[in-house]
Picture (tube, rainbow over the protein chains, first blue to last red):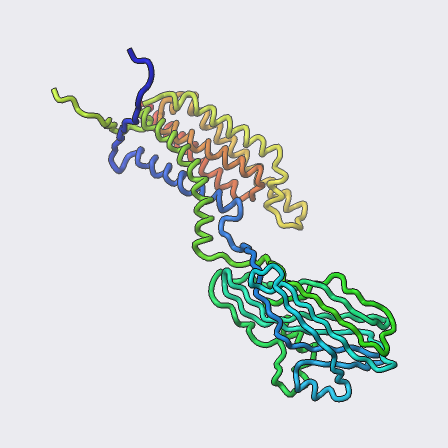
Length: 309
Length: 139
């Protein structure tokens, strides 16, 4: 007495035919309809080839201790300036005013990468001088390691002008990466590893802010100081020094890159195979119906042990 | 040779194809607009509209030929014609569904028409000639 099914296995029936038959034509049509439409479906529904992707990394940023500062002390074009470039300081003449500067870079979360720059500048003023505007340029070295290795020199530019004289300017912002093109997925990317300001140049044009910003913005990869809320404290600073406090954080960046060959192929393959499985299942049923019911004539050979009798 | 292919699934596929062709007939405005550039004149619209109407009417005409052949018994029991017809009308239904919902351009309709309406009607006519003209037994 048979109560339950204890074991089962499929038995193969082979259908054979010669080359020039309707069955072969049917097979060719079915193969085309099984393997080509999934590619069309995957491609036409967009996103088949991965062209752009992102990753996160905190960059390794170091302040390069090169600074340029210009402060307007009147509304008629009087200014004082200071920099870390000896050639420029020599050219400034009477407009040179040397401030007291204190800089601190900290690694707040102790992960080996610096997170915060604190830059404090105190500009001494003469008795009748007031500060109406400030321009400050700071230079950094910026490095990324996770995908392509990026090494570059970049800058942060602070500028504020006010119709009323101020005693203090407080800037707190993030150093953000600006990409015009996606980065490569591997290799060394150091075409921008040149100083933003050429400190060895004796010409005044090398220290002109307009020239510096123009050639810097021509780059495809730059950093920019993102500071939405500068605080300009109004007041008579005459006599006491003008205070400039800048805090710059180095946050985790979301970086766009162009994926490599294998990553692109992996995602394309996943899309193709997941649609292919459906088509294989459907045409497997169609083929089974056609050949089992002899819609097209073939010779069927069941597999089984022949009886030896 | 299994007659079920000819008898039962074939008319179903036919009907699905027919229904979609009629649906496209009634809502062909979006498809016509997809063939035209952004700025188009009324004449351009009318030309494209007329072309699509001609294509749809030709499809219906070829349907009639196929149905005539089928009900006259010429191809009802020909399993290869049945298989071809089933396959081609099923693909036509799917393709025209995409045509309607994804608003494909008019030119694509001519391709679908060629493969999925002209081909089975042509085979139908060949069978007609074979049976009535050359007096061969229907397959």
